[in-house]
Amino acid sequence: MRRLAALALVLLGLAPGAGAAETGRVHGQIVVAVPGAELSQLGPLVAYLEAPAGEARLSYAVPNAVPEMRQADARFEPPFLVVAAGQRVSLPNDDPIYHNVFSYSKPNAFDLGLYPQGETREVTLRHPGVVRTYCSIHESMSATILVAPSPWYAVAAPSGRFEIRGVPAGRYRLRVWNARLPLASRTLRVSEGRGTEIVVSIGAEDAASPAAPAPGGR
Image (cartoon, rainbow, N blue to C red):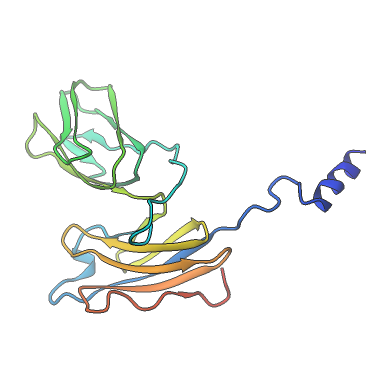
């Protein structure tokens, strides 16, 4: 009887997962067209997807994962972190001294107060943007948190290659961020179950080559 019931659900399109849209991916190459600039020397490059210009912000489920930026040896580890807007960040203190983690970066400004070794404080970063993070006790401590406008982002490899997986079908604006370079962007469309390949050139008059589905789909 169970087999007959399962078969009936399949035939009716009611089986678990039936009708669910298949996601796509965006992948490609970041190229720097700024005289004297070398990709490997510029620090983190992040490619992320947001709503096209003039459209409402993307709707998504905020990731449950809570990334960590630890305080160890009077440094932030890692010194750079990317999260999606609305995501929590954990900042444990591993040092045998007090720290006071804070940021003046509006609208994500925060101050976690003094706390000792073994304690952890968390902050929810609700707004897209760059969050410069410091310790009020130790002037040498600094870090950067990039709050992306969606969970569809990737930190590019030193070669400039990147891949964003699990992207729902639709129109997006791809942006490439780096602390030392101007933003580059391009509007593209992602299709169900297919890859969209793009080459983004930062500093060039033409921000990117046309986005196109990758040969062979996935």
